[in-house]
Image 1 (spheres, rainbow, N blue to C red):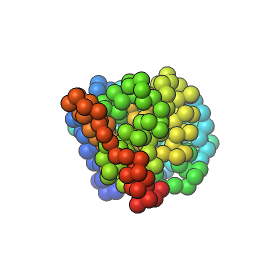
Image 2: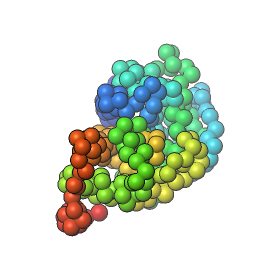
Image 3: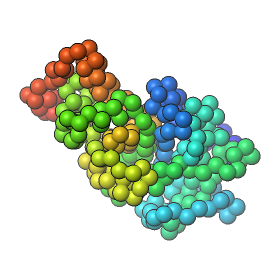
Length: 271
């Protein structure tokens, strides 16, 4: 694998972007302990490097993902800290290849000597479900990031705004440029047991209309065409929530943009 990384500059660049974002997530306190996970569809970068996968570990999946047949993904490892991923990506991330029938996957570690037991993120099923939805609709998103953005989690604890519409009014209302970068607004999934089939299905429903989805009292998922832009989407939404809290903490109710101002912005930033 070490030789492949040297030869495949595009793959090496993707790994560098993942480690950069992992550092950002850790620095912001959005990836406490082993929180957060990232996956990237790298199928178009592989060019058949892993034709011989007979000796690689193969694990079954809880569901079948036929639209991802034989595709490759770079994923973060389960039980791995983002701060360690930023420093030692080969020890904390791996590449998987989905089987031909979509029901299992091969594991290709980036540093097999040091990490023989490395497994994909525990949220792998949710990531693959989202990647499959992307494949079915034929859009260009390749990246999924899940993190525990502090301000966004705090926002979902406010009883008076527990609806997608009210949350989006706040997100759009705190800064006019949010509409430019998040014109679809954000999806919202009421509290559901993490890792469950139910939360995965609810998240898929929200990703039909949004690129950022907020999990009540848990965190946020975002999809995008590249690693940095996907992180940017989370950061933009989180900053808007932070502005709202800063106004509250200063002792006044944030005025926000009016409905007329938001509608005017919508006309300029078409979906």
